[in-house]
Image (cartoon, rainbow, N blue to C red):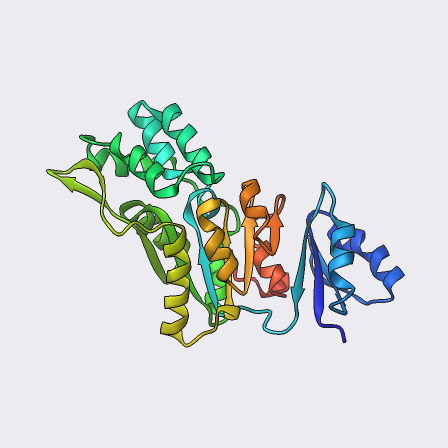
Length: 286
């Protein structure tokens, strides 16, 4: 029974897969100019996917049953946006190097996420909220493919949620720009239009992301198998593990062990190819 798809993504992917498909006597299905797949038995597909891994392509091995997901959960920092928002703020306020080191260690799983977050936020004490918002508007950039990913899934009836350990005052504008249905984020405390250097409890960390996934499934009458999730760091592990299909986007090593697929080369439209969308089905964002 051909119940798995091996998806090859990247420049020249259809040509690269064609010879493999011929040897396997399995028809190749072209999804787009940079993606193609073959359908293989469950016992064969993982081995083929493993053997095809290279320095040029992203490979995913996906069950055909329930392939198109009904709910997308996405991390924000270094996933939907290209930066770590707290690092951007710290750099603008003059203590970027110190914060960036803490962020990197936390995302690698070397530091407790909540403790690292509180340590970094404490450095914001006394800084103006308006200046922070202005800095992020100027410096934050949306990751390639994010808008098309969200717009396409919504057009096909899926729900989409931005779930981040970042902060609501920054995440809400990002969610609006990209087109997410919902956004869940931490909250920074402030007084007199300045940061107090504290995070409002409860902190949305690793476990909270997975809990939010389960809550959204209950709310929308879905199973966890109906979810595709994407993130890059240690605090995304539980969410990635709980989802029907978890994707590591340019992930830290600690997340690679958990993710069902790892994207090193493709942009976020790869999540559409993974679900079996053809390029002509993409709803391209302007």
